[in-house]
Length: 77
Length: 263
Image (tube, rainbow over all chains, first blue to last red; front, side):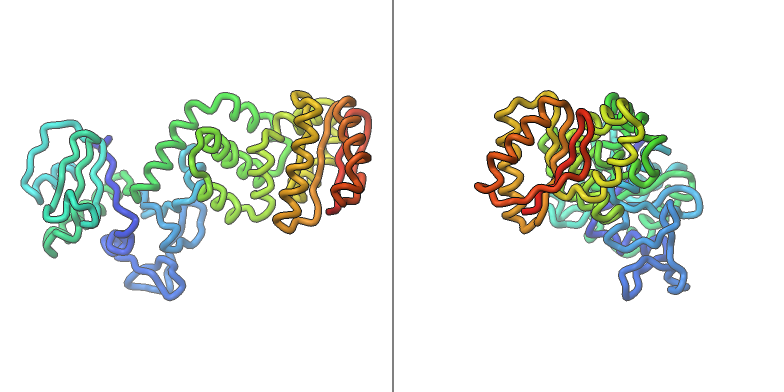
């Protein structure tokens, strides 16, 4: 059953982030809804803008960026 | 109960065909416009129409997404999954590309290796005649002009056809040349042993015209092999006045030449 992937359309990014109690600030950076000063971090410790958001991975909510270089790193893990 | 069983419970459906993907979508697609979900048997996908769900179902769906991540899974934007799956496949089948990375991994800076790694994937897609503009943009955003140069040089086969032979003939020459090549080769022509005289002269003329058209004020010519160096030098002597450029030697020793043409 776990081999079924769960995905979302790009147009639903904000709704999906809402599921995880996240929102975006004035600079389009993803932050905690309850603590907007707290930015979420990508696998390599960078802030994540809404346009860069590609998903969330297991653990303490590791945010995945959707660019080639980030996904290349991910594909090697 | 796994996340998919919980999903089935929300919508009260049974599915008797294999699935590989559940995608949450908007109702922009006419096929799903009036439905909460649609089973796409051909592609083994279940599409959930988010905008058609009531608030209770949206909340339940949100819990499923959180459960999936908290139980060790991942949720991905659909285009991101497509690219990630292509990269997983690429890791298994990269063959010659892996040899190139292995060759340079101990002699190039780590960031350049990472740019080259992504550039080799970009080249594969380019050779498959896919649209690579977004991939190239990703490399440029992450590594700047240097990354862009590496992508251009990589797509042209520069690393294996030019830099590996130079390194194998002289590590010292490689170290002298490398920085010039990756930091300044906005528009580069490399002349290698598989090119005949006609190809070389056509490529030189084409790149000079192109550079002028795009407002670039220089191009680099990199040549390897005595025969090619002679062709390059003769060509420059014959065309200097006609094509309006000024040449400046950057590096030359037996069998290797790098020239800068100021346009």
